[in-house]
Image (cartoon, rainbow, N blue to C red; front, side, top):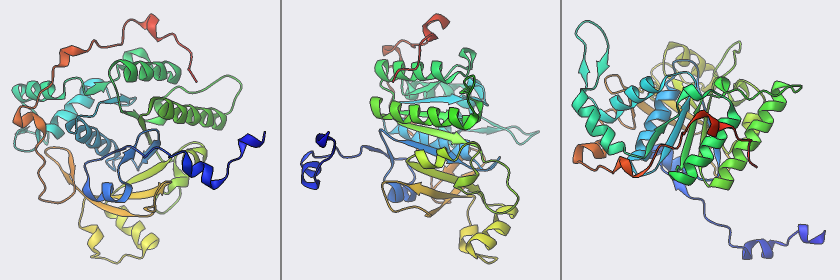
Length: 322
């Protein structure tokens, strides 16, 4: 039993492995957090329309550009809508077309083909036809990590997953679910990014405690981030929360990333400005920033080197491995 306790010099001698960080592609956020660490779980929240899904999609695209492999489950949007949104972000305003009769943007088919070739086997979208049971999805994640080499998994969002078990409360189910996510992230050395909606509250800016569901979410995740849309409501709430007056320089952007929790660092409460570009649906670090992704320079990969490991629905009948 005494072996369960260690002295400080023994712990130091073990040479703890360095955290492997994956950069978000946003300069100021990466300076604050260092990036998103493998073996950890983060939660992204924000009110409806704040841009949290667009931000997450953009981070995924930036990781693809850095030759990382990502998998996304979206319980609210079809795979077609997810990929169309990412086509816009990858293309940029130089390559999108706007409809004359409505505020709608699209990417020409030829550009879509070029972007798809560039994405290759680095971007994967979960097929919702297989359902939303978290045990089945966890089995798929494990298989994708082993076969394809997935490094980032995005779950958008928590409330669309079927995590309920007979005879237990919602809080108990969520606690077990988050524990399983943490175990999965550590065992497979991946980062899992969980998108979660806030629950309704009476007044003021949303805080970590407002994430819908159990308080275990805020306690168990390693990193928590909120996307605030800088609109009239936000400005009024920010006056109360931060004491900002009219004309404050923080209002000169489209969105503000607030770091609610940074377990490994000291960036909690940091505020980072982002700028939204309507035509491309991109979030930018600076108003005049223009990112050119690898597809423009012809950096393609062979998408045929892997077989999509979905198989038939019989393959999805696994139990959650621990």
